[in-house]
Length: 93
Image (tube, rainbow, N blue to C red; front, side, top):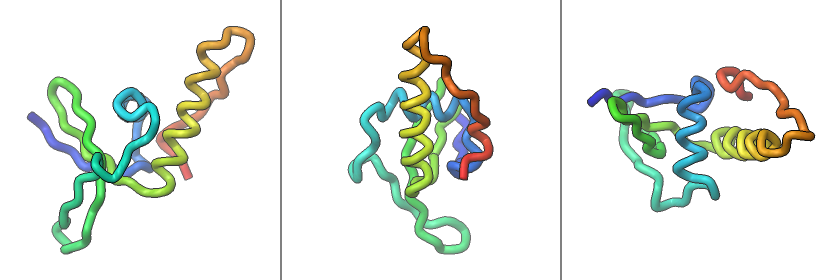
């Protein structure tokens, strides 16, 4: 199985979908995995899996906002009268 560490800025639509499906109400402290990288920096991440890959997505304020924004956009998709805004999730600020 492939293991990847992904920064929120490099999330693609598929990984963001996985995050929102796994954590529809957001993630809590018990979902966070902490580890040290090669530079001995503490990294905090949440885990999502596909059949062939385990993703550790680095957490932070901006990841939370990206998930919230995606959730709002996803809700708009359910309402046929409200067009969903288009966005590039690879360039979240």
